[in-house]
Length: 162
Image 1 (tube, rainbow, N blue to C red):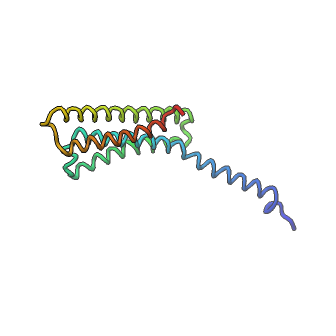
Image 2: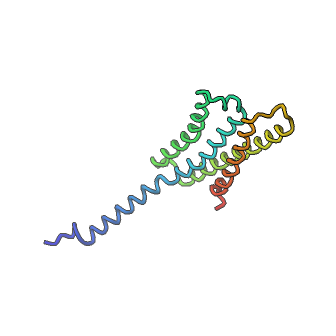
Image 3: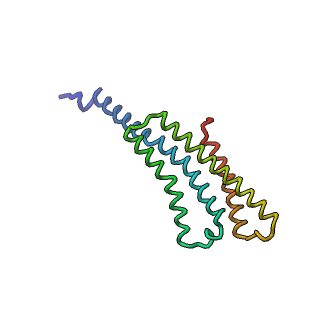
């Protein structure tokens, strides 16, 4: 006996619905990922700003310096998890995801630009006076500037101009 439930059109429909559901699941987690990617830049800028301003303490290698990494991770993960939860529970719309993405990107761009400006100012100040010169501080500033140049290309790709 030929059963159309196992073969034929209904099986094709079932496969089509399963395919649609898996595509919906993949899409469901896509917008929060973009939010977390844009906040990673902010976390890196925060960590390098702390390393610049408190270079003596930061370079000492004390266990308390791990709190900087914890704070940077919390600044990245907490908003991302909150938005991902609201998005998964369908409590916010596409427009709100766009608003959050724009705000987070602007926050990341501002923090990176501020960090770059402060690094360049510190590097000029160190070059002007010999008393402020330390090898670890100069290395930290140059490392920050290299990282920020790399970040600027990534931030350009994340910007809403595309």
